[in-house]
Length: 328
Ligand SMILES: [Zn+2]
Image (cartoon, rainbow, N blue to C red; front, side, top):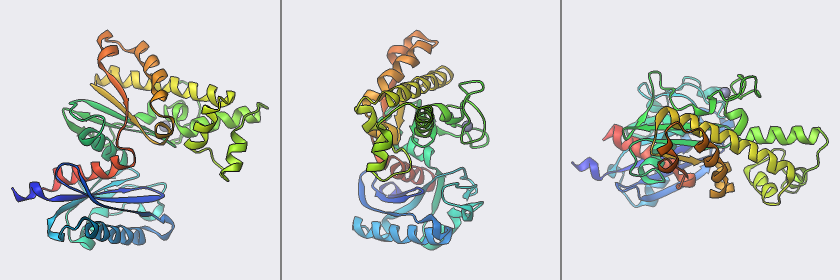
């Protein structure tokens, strides 16, 4: 089949930037373009920016347009992939509500398009080309501002009956716990995400504890606590930050254990901004907590809990994989 040799385009559409990669049959990146998303311009302009970036990425790859088999897009919000619809994207704005992105993009590009959720495409990327390569059953957890998850079951993306599987960030872990971004209490995201850590540090500061975090924020001219700031404060053994990080690691460990007991995967791949900054050492306490809660004692030795390996590329690569699977 000719299509097997075609290149596919993966787009990782984020609230801040968008990454377009032309991906060859073996996952090689043949051309890429990164640009600012500028969501304030509205969906039509962002689509236009995506189209321009795709043309540029194809030009950089040196491939002819007809060598491209299709385009996959990872969208930062819930989607209906069969209908090609974006449900909504809180960090892109209201012009994305119920947007027929697949149709719009396909018309502009004159190429077939498929869309999915950004966390799902990240999981597919890590499974196909990254830390989860070769596994049949894999769970991906991305820890950043929020916590997202994607499941690979029997080698394929598992989506559930209503396309909402893998929402591990909203796993309830603490009755009556802190309020989550979704409005409910005690979910994993409210306990182990970067924003959960930020909230805890702010509470400690409000309670009169001293910390170097406000200084780091002032020096970096930031009003929020980025993963870099948390990492710097942790490395400096700032006592508030160390306590808060250890608490977040504990809850991430509980989350991993809950998922492992449910799914019995071969591997749990953990990525996202916090892990990118904190590195492998972040996972050791997470593993130790998880192991204490595994129900099958063999899981302690056999379930690998590892860091994602594709960094910023997991989304674009995974989107290209889905395009190849669905559009070839
Ligand atoms: Zn929640």
